[in-house]
Length: 224
Image 1: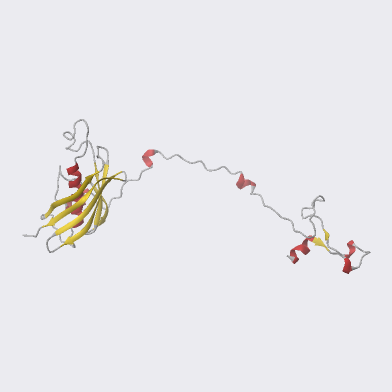
Image 2: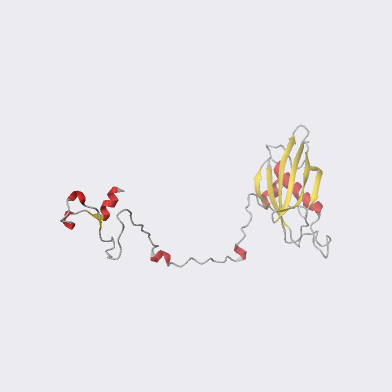
């Protein structure tokens, strides 16, 4: 601070010719801004504040662009399309209830979607005045996703000898209607290769909310 203080004051002998140099006291010099009205006490330093750059300060804030609703929601990824699904599952119209796989870990888990549309063949009868997807078909669709998990060479499943063996603790939380996208996750919990039994846990969602959940048993028969 000594060096800084010295720069703010004048100690020249010419300012006080009648006093010896040893008795000189620092005399405030003219302000840094050359204004006669501004001076600083000898025992303190001035405080300076910097204002914002005028060009930056006055720059207009970028207006928020309203994104149209049709561009706000990204589509589901495609890890496995319908043709690849058909190569694994033996199901065909009107009973193939999986449209796309969006996450896939062979022998571990899979996440797939079923686009529920009013053109599905079950809606004319379930129900004519209120199109609700039958709960048993939600369970069937989830079982098919389980088939995609298990019908792999490393797991040992065969599309010709793979069966839905049982369900337990199934709960239906909300109705699924035409226009919904059913998102199903199936996860392998236990595999007994000796007996050809696989236990899986499944959950189905619409808009991030659980609509169906349960435990599934899959039976893998032996090739004859």
